[in-house]
Length: 353
Image (cartoon, helix red, strand yellow):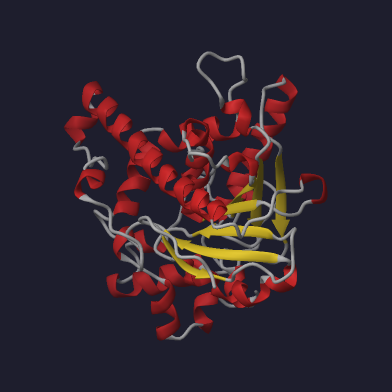
């Protein structure tokens, strides 16, 4: 029987550990913006045949999880135009938003500690790419991954040393925004903001766009951000209204919702960029007051779907360049690798699992 977890996050599904295996990998997946981890349920029946245990975790404000309390919502400032001109207001908003994401990282950390304490997790075998915990954040969920890595060294799990079990963090098809990267060279197109589309048609247009397949070139100028392919068709075209309702939760992404406010503020205040820097380039052991070196062995994988939305491909271009430059400068950094899934769109795991 799969263990029961306490805390504000909701484990939507848990495949359980493969019977008889002592070197299985435990994969914990967090979702993105308005689509919860129901989108990953087709992976569950495949887990044991791949010597894996898979847990699908819904974030705060999504089905089954606890809603954000008032004191946490208060950390998500919506500044007026005048307040953006006030350095003190901006500094307070940045501080509070940093606390907000630190708290979200702590919640994930605590869930992972419970997972280890349950006893159904194997120790990592890094040399053979087996065992331990691999935690992945899809799309906006990538910000939860960078926040976890940025803050984990300052957390305590009591007698449980999570770093001894956490093998890898995966940033799965994460676009530029959750990483705090500069916007693409080409003008960003999002159908929901396209005033040439009748208002009642914008959400369907957005769903087709975000789940579409795009043909991209190899340069920033040749990334396609508007016109998706007709063959294969967008993933949403194969979903019934019931299926769509079972994998989406629009409220956090609506104006004033927690994810909507986080995205808008996280970009303007530079929070996402700060988390990414701290996550990928942990301080050395001899840096004053630092114990980040103890977590340096946790690997990072950037996984990109090659026919995804342009923001994900743009992020890969920038991150590859950044990592190459960091290596050339000899900066302390994690083991960072890049993986591409050929022919895949942003929703590949739903139809092709």
